[in-house]
Image: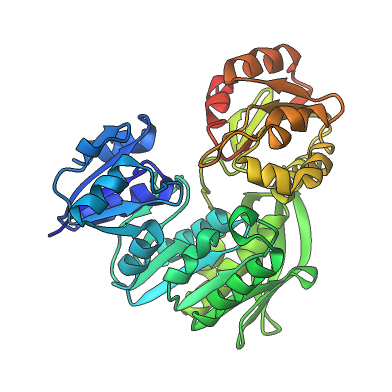
Length: 426
């Protein structure tokens, strides 16, 4: 039994790790800026959560765990250094926890990690594999970001930011895509690619994608989707093949053609572990998904909440929606970090122009200081016809008066824009 104190315990991965350590009988505490659904859940499990960062939060701890947003000026970090308490990063702890399992399945990529991780998890659960799952969202299947199972399978997301995923040694990894992302850390796209190359080298088996051919492959397996067809309401089906052998039909209960590629990776991983195809197809047919991943919060008018915060993701969401509706597309978007906005400024403009009407909400700065030339307001000023809002309530009032049954509202972003979605929920 050990004592762990988490700084930033309300983070989606931090809270999952805290819950797992608590389940093993350890003493767990943590701090964050304000109460959230995640911190309330932690408290309900007997974890002490302190709001605001203070030296006094750090009682008796064997280890302090810090997420990527915590800097050296944090008073709890200073207190830990003063006392000589060992400080670990979230990534280091995730790596340690994962090594308690026989098989580590880690899903990486700039986009699609959470959905693909959830697909793999739901297939493994349906097949009776009883996996332990760490996911970067709240699963609609098991209503948590953590599922505790047996010690045979550990299924997790693998984030590249600050080379976090290099703390993992995957039995099987997935690389969905590599893009110009997190350049505040990597500086150049070449460095991003080098990091993914290192991640692949640490993996015993790596599943990669050939997007043009709709193929997910390893050195021994090649899973292909043929005869892809739109089934209506933004959902797709296709014929699945493995090493040119017909497996059967896949009907995806997930909106967007990009989910065909995600599902091909999930199928490839499942076949590596000998899961029967009928179990795979059944799980994908009944796929529950993750909150804030094309989550429908209202039916009439249609209001969708999605975590999309990168231009590629925004583009996919808008085009996927246009595929099944003639409605006017209204986008409410909250930029996430100034560095991302600055680095991908022109790409954001191009993606947002695909919408019929755009509302941009004050930047969710996360770990960063205000930068006027990369702010949400500056983005709105450079997008013809865009509306800027300094807060959620103002955005809600303006959008509500313009929303009708002939409109579809897409609420996009990785910050606290889900608060806006709650205002529109049925």
